[in-house]
Figure 1 (cartoon, one colour):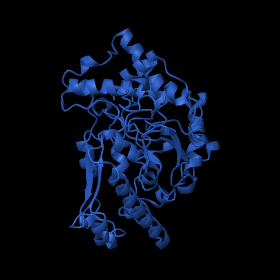
Figure 2: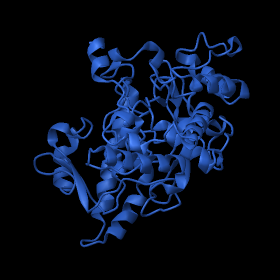
Figure 3: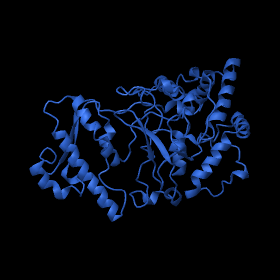
Length: 406
């Protein structure tokens, strides 16, 4: 199987793709060689600490021998501080300048990066499938299950844009494995949710490079990122919203156990919530409604504790009744604006039952940009990673030229 995967997943270099060579900086020319050398230095200083499997050996003083599980975050913090030193950058530059740097390089450290450092959308790091006692329990390690909390992240209210603090849970969640940059010219849009950059159905080389250029510019120049149609600059990106008035119907077979005993009673006295067949309908939701406010509601608890399960069930029932009661009070023919106000008043109880209360899909990964150092309003955990040098526009262009050779 390993041989098959190696055979089927070699790097696809832009230089070998139809018409690709003409889209690269020419190392045979002085200008092209100078740009690529500069790009290598920028990559070594800013990116290689996470996006290279070749790196200088860490000094013994970092004490990185026993970092699995509960000790991981403290070890990572020591490693991160070392990568900010001239000692690391000088050695890393020599590694990147080596003629065989890209040979056999996975272009990832495969490390777990805390969400407090990445500041990207936390819904993927909050995934629960691999937690202890969950469906993929046997596919995750004990060191994963004993990871500490990364701390507190800063999120935004989807209606007002106001910032608020959310404590990330421990036990495996809160970290993102570093993706490989092999053939990165062909894999945009970026981030785990592919939300950074435009999407194109055209698979041609020219189209892939066009999407890469637009996406990498949004990555390195955050002001070019798409911002929310409703909140604009109040939030650091865009929110996935409904495009028309809609509703969610939960079929009877998928209704949480906590609601099933109430179905007959609620159909009689609240037919707008429970239909004759036992289906539960939530809505209508107005146009421009944050999709994940409803889609991320957690009907079942992530625990086997009887008391916690009962408490969660009570919250589910309470939210369902309040949601439909408030919606039933909206007059017939109400505008989307009126419906939006109703949901705005329900944000807090809905977030208490949300598997992921983060709505900004294209934020974060601000390395090398001034936005990384804009820490006003961030949590102490997010600020603990310190300041980073800001790349000039010429540095960013040189980095892009080097990335295209991967």
